[in-house]
Image 1 (cartoon, rainbow, N blue to C red):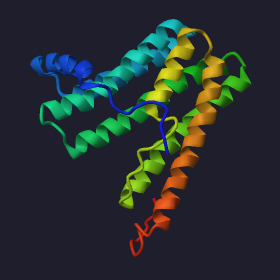
Image 2 (image 1 turned 90 degrees about the vertical axis):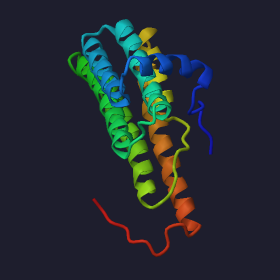
Image 3 (image 1 turned 120 degrees about the vertical axis):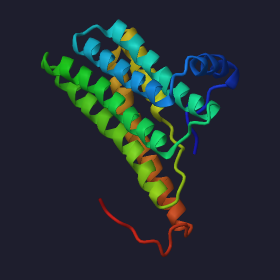
Length: 203
């Protein structure tokens, strides 16, 4: 199973930025929070129909998601809470951006775009949920043709070039296909006997 984009950025790009952030005594969690606030700001811009500015902020906020993990590793601040906090805030960021678009299109009776925004959000949440459930079973499910990096880039660029409808179609279709892909991976790995004998709880 492959992904469209690599899930790591070359260190020659991130290291100088991470060095400056560490020198400024900025914590990884603070960086994560800044990314969420940036996404919330993008959502406000998108809800007002300011797609160019909103798209730029979406990409800028998404870049912080790359740096917070690198900063945590570089400064020895990797914690279990930090990992959970980062994952949850990623979901909040995506929901905020898509809600901003949903608000904009719902106010203009654009039924297709509104439904696409909802479908994209549902797919995005399922991609993360399936990975989390897999990890509970002791399975590593990181593969995906359309993970968070791809989703951020598509929605950010789509807004910047005023092709939001196309971007939403791509998100709605490929995010849900990725959810199915990860569900298949869980099925395949459990078929190999990785979880035999383990109790399965339901939320």
